[in-house]
Amino acid sequence: MKKLVAYITTGYPDLKFTEDLALSLAEAGVDTLELGIPFSDPVADGPVIEKANLYSLQNGFKMKDLFEVSRKIAPHIDTLWMGYFNPFYHKGLDLFINEAKSSGVNGFIIPDLPYEEAQAYKPQIESAGLSLIDFIAPTDTEQRIGMITKDAKKFIYLVAYAGITGAGKSESLDEVVATIRKYTQTPVYVGFGVDENSAKEKAQGVDGVIVGSAFVKILLDESLSSAQKIEKVSSLARIIKEKINE
Image (cartoon, rainbow, N blue to C red; front, top):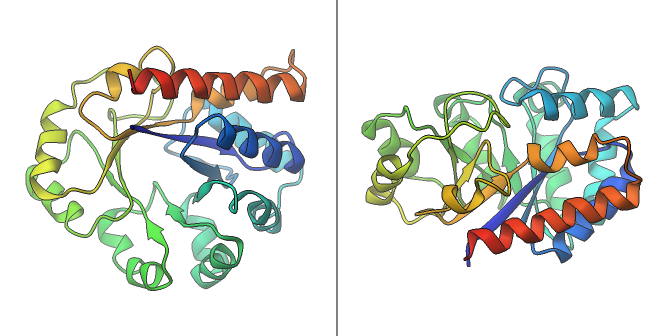
């Protein structure tokens, strides 16, 4: 059974909604929740997720809100915090490790922390029983793939193309997946540009997909009520989970 990872932005439109949506996604078959930490300059994300980040911050998001809502969500679904390195650095990695462990969160996805720099923090994270997800891009050399995969845990985040999330480009990943398989048995999940139309194709040869912009786009639709947004996102999650396992 191939896995589905769903990204949502914490606190958009509010914390109660985040909690309700997360629990609904768990029921819809989502295997892992990527709980986004709102940030003013999400460099790896496209305009959809960037807008949700901005709205959450404008609504008064504080880091304590992430910790509070995670305590309610993490017992029910495998949860990872996705955020940029700035908050981890300024507030201290110890704080995030301690809060993750107390709430049941299982690790971090930090897209702007390069592999080389991550080595200064990874031992501390992993010694606490948490995961720091590694990224591989189609442009990485075989030597670099071998280096990154040698200690990759939980899953490898394979970026579907060079660029930002939600751009919907299409590139063949067969060669890079084959190279990864030479070095590790760690599951490989494809992210960036995955939606109901591309999920089946992108899931070929890998162990799962990561979906973000397709879900957040629904959250930004102001013509829908909160209940309708939750129902629509959860329905889309079911469709994608079914397609990747056809």
